[in-house]
Length: 440
Image 1: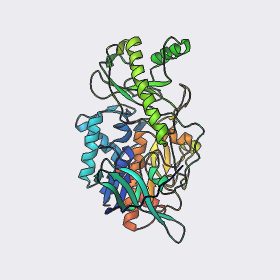
Image 2: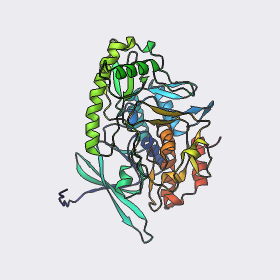
Image 3: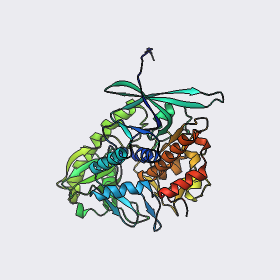
Image 4: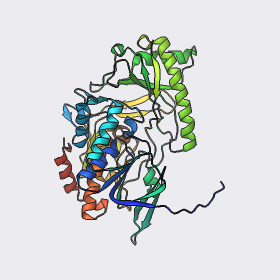
C-alpha cells in the first residue's frame, strides 16, 4: 500500500487529570466517578450525544442489575437509573432489574449528570491517535489523545486515561497488547424501531424473570421454517428479542445478525448496508406473518450497529469463564456481573445462553495492562476470555466497570502513582462507600 507522510502542528487543549474516551454506559459512569472524586475530567464522544450502545445502538433493556433477590450493580449506575426514572425515562422490570428506558431521556440525564459534576464534554470528536513516551523502565505513558472535529485536529493532554470505546481504540493506538482474536467473532446486529405495533400482544416485551431467554420462540420457529422451505427470502437472524421504549405501540427489534470484524472500516461499512437492508426485509415479513406487527412501520434504524465483540486488552489478569461462573471473589474485586453468558453464533441462528448460579466478580487487575501506568479500560474491552466477556459486556455490568475505573483513576491522580500501584483496599473501600456491591 502506498503511503504519504503528513506533518502538522496540533494545538494542545488544556490538560486534564482524567480523560475518558467514549461516552457509552461505561464512559459516562467513569467520568462521573472521576469528577466526583475531585479529578479534573473530560469525556470524548464521536456522536453529538451520550449513551453509546443504549442510545446510538438502541440496545435495550439495560441489563441486569439484580440477581437471586439482591441488587448486584449498585452505586453510581443505579443512581443514574433513579435519575432517569425520576423524569419518566425508565421502568424497572422487577425482580430481575432490567431497565426499559427512553433513549432520548437517557441522553438528557447523562449530559445533565456529567455537567453537574463539572465534566467537560467533547462531542463530534473522533479519536485518531495517541502520543505516548517510554520511561527508563520501558513503561509507556500516554501524554495526549488526538481528536479530529470541526475545529480540526486537537490534542487533549491528560495525566490518566480511560478507554471506554468498547473496541479498545485508544489502547490499540497506544500499543497495548490484545487478547488473541477468536476464529469467529460474535456477530454484529443493527437494532430497528417499529411503530404501529400491538405491544400488548407481544409475550416477551418485559424482561423480568430470572433464568429466561427473552426471545420470541413463535417468531423464531416460523422464520426458521420459512428459511428451510425457501418460500421467503429470510436473512440470517437471531432471537428475535424486543423491548419497548415506554411509549405505546413502539418497539425495538433485535434480530439482524452477521459476522464482521467491526474494527475494519471497509468491513463495517459493508455490514451497515447489509443489516439495514435486512431490517427493511424483516419489517415486511413481520407485517405479513405476525398479527401484532400487521400495522408496523419502520421509523428508525440505530445510528450505529451493535457490536458484541472486538478487541480486548491483555491485562495484568485475564478473567476466565471458569473463574467468573464459579463466582471467584478476588482480593481486588471491584465490579460484578450477573447477565447470562451470551455467545451468539457468527454463521447461524444459534446462541449459547448459560445462566449464572450467582453473580460473578471482576478483579481490578483486569482493567489495566502491565507497563501502561496511566491507562485503564471501562467496557467490554477489559481483559477477559470469550466466556467471561460474553456476560460482562452488557450495559449494567459495564457501568460497574466504569465506576471502578473512574474511581481508581482519580485515586491514582491524587497520589500521582501508576494505576497498577493503586491500593486496592482503599479503592474497594471507596467503591463500597459509593454503594457498590462487592460481596456475596
